[in-house]
Amino acid sequence: MSTARLTINLQALASNWRALDAKTDVETGAVVKADAYGLGAGPVASTLAEEGVRKFFVAVAEEGAAVREAVGAGPMICVFSGHMEGDTDLLRTHDLTPLINSPQQFQRHQQAMPDHAFGIQLDSGMNRLGLEPADWAELRSKAEALNPVVVMSHLACSDEPDHPMNRQQLQTFREMTEGVTAPRSLAATGGTFLGPEFHFEFCRPGIGIYGGMPFADAKPVVTVDLPVVQIRALEVGETVGYGNSWTARRPSRIATVTAGYADGLHRAIGGGIDTFAGDHPCPVVGRISMDLITVDVTDLPHDPDRLRILNGHQTVDDLAEAAGTIGYEILTSMGSRYSRGYVE
Image 1 (cartoon, rainbow, N blue to C red):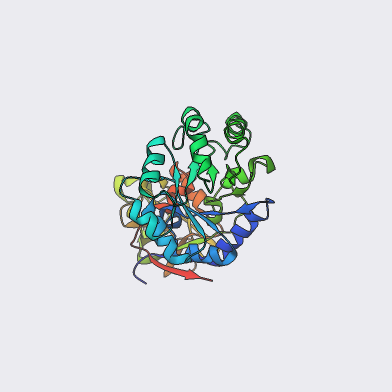
Image 2: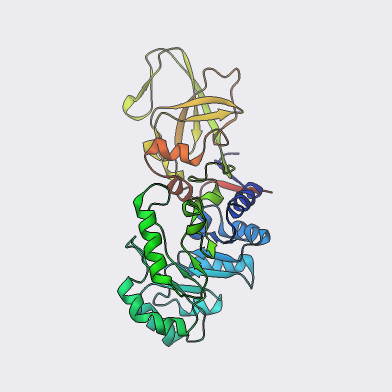
């Protein structure tokens, strides 16, 4: 193995979806945008479809086409960006459901595809996507006459259960959708944990399915193994990496492994994380560079062939915390250089 290997455990992924589904009494969909958070829309979506998922969510129409290929006819595939200019053929060919975000999109959809299913996305306070309350009030009777298949909004602070914004958005969404007959959705992963009043007719978790926070009990889905290129002996006082950022305080053995910030292992991670030889932690030392990471393996009784940086001991959220970012960014930025494998 000369390249780093990323292994995706589809059984753990399915188990996480089932666990999230069990937390509510309503239907559970799945967000598979950004190539299923970097893990492969095809294998992920087909696994979830086998589990019974019937509502999938993607960011743009092109992503929806890949998901449709994986799941076949039947399940609904909703497009968060709605009906963008140039989307008509993709929406029609792959039977995708745009979530209308503006009066302009509504008009475009009605002109181009008057008989094609659509959903409505409402802005309940996040100010990112969706119809503003005034636009919705104006459009509502026309839209409802055409039977939207879903009406949804998105929580801004659901990963902070006590944040007042959650109650505020819940109240706004209730007011905006009072009397709506279409299935409604407000909760993604974080909202699923906020309790039944946030669940409406269905929830649509994303990051929790892939093993990320705020689903603390999620099974790890991703492991990453890094091949060792070289091991060298250092004397006391010798330094490692750019900027001499680490100095040996004892005679040390340093392993250089292939992976770096070009593979989504951000330069900002620096120290404070480990790699693992089995269950034995070996600290990352020196700066992470584009293609290489240096690791202190002095305490190992043997020279390892590879070291694991993501596993059950150290999660995407641990790496994210060390880098000052979020697990979503770590997952979605793991680039194309990994050799990828799926295990059932």
